[in-house]
Image 1 (tube, helix red, strand yellow):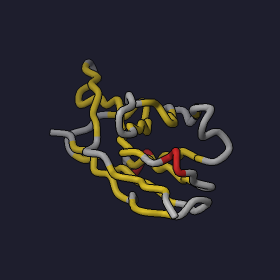
Image 2 (image 1 turned 180 degrees about the vertical axis):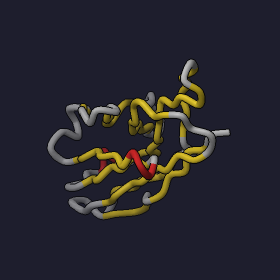
Image 3 (image 1 turned 135 degrees about the vertical axis):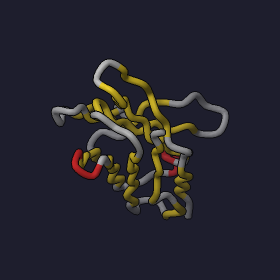
Image 4 (image 1 turned 90 degrees about the vertical axis):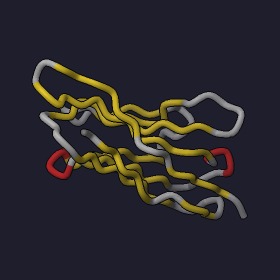
Length: 120
């Protein structure tokens, strides 16, 4: 059984920073992509940032230059460093990973979500 556990959310003032972490555990053969999504009230879940197994990254236009995604494959962990936070970044942030539990099978896994609130 695979679990993703997130940490690092909270309340921060505009212009502040937060760092999210998401660690995978369980019977894992390999991890392909690691991503962060977010969902604000009344809006659809959107991709914030992703990092491939090779280290290639991609970002939503709204966070480019402010957020940095990184991964530690040995620790099965993905990070999201969020700087210059804005009120519109307020959302529940979800970790997502594409994981092979055996070599012939790849599935999507999600974390439970962590609340990020940007407010003065």
